[in-house]
Image (tube, rainbow, N blue to C red):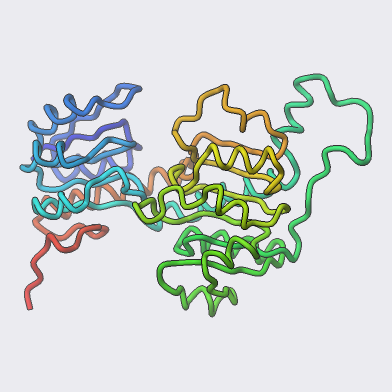
Length: 327
C-alpha cells in the first residue's frame, strides 16, 4: 500500500510506516503543494498523511474518493471538509492530546511576555534606546491573583489553567459548548457565559476549534466588552479573531495587550502594525514546535495509518460515523 506524506516528518513516524512495509513518498518542497498537484499525486496513492494547511475540500475529496483514509499531523482540522469526507466513507484522523503541553507552554509564554512588554523591550536594545532610566516608562502588569478566562477549556486550555493556577494563583473561568466537569473539580474552574468571560477575564486565552460558529467571534463587539486592562491570547486558529478589530482595540487601548501564535490571515506580513506595538507579542505558529511533540505527532499520525492498513478504525478518527459498529 502506498502512502503520500505532504511534508518531511520526524523519523520516528517514518520508521513506524516503513517497518509496517508501506511504500512511502514524502514531499520535500518548502512551499504548500498546489491542490491540483496534490490531487494528481494522491491518485497514485492509497492513503494521505497530511501535514500543514493542505486544502482538503469537497473538490479534493471527490477527486480522491479512492483514498482509504487521511491522517492529519495536527490537532486542528478546519482545513478539511469533514462532512464530505464522511459522505464518501473516508475516515479522517488528527493528533489531539500529544501537543497539549507544548501549545499551552506557548500560551503561557505569550501571556508573560505581553504582561511585561518583553518583545518590544528587546527591540529597544537593537535600536540603541536602552539608556536613560525612567521609572514610569514601559511598565508591565503583574499576573498574581488575576482571573484567567479560557475560551475552549479542552486539553490545551486545561494545561494552561494548571500552569496559571500554580504559578500565579489565578482564578479560572471558562466558556465551552459543553461543561468541563473534571476541570471544575480539579481547578475550581467556573463556567460562565461568553459575555461574562469577556467582562471578567484579566487574561483571555483562546483554545477552541475554528468553525462557522466561532469564526471571528473575537471582533470589535467582543473586544469592547473586555476590560481595558485585559490581555488577549490566541494560540488556536487565527480565524477566531478579526485582526483589524484587534488592531483597533489595541491602538485605542480598549484592551491592554495581545499575544498571538496564530494570525488572520496567516502568515502575517512583515509590515503588519501589530508587530510594532509595544503591547503585542507575535510568534509564527510554533505551538507544537518541540522535538518531543513533533515526534509524538508523527508517531500518532503513523499509527492512524497503520490501523487503516490493517482494516481497523483509526484510533484518533474525527468522523467516527464512517465506521459501522457491529452490535
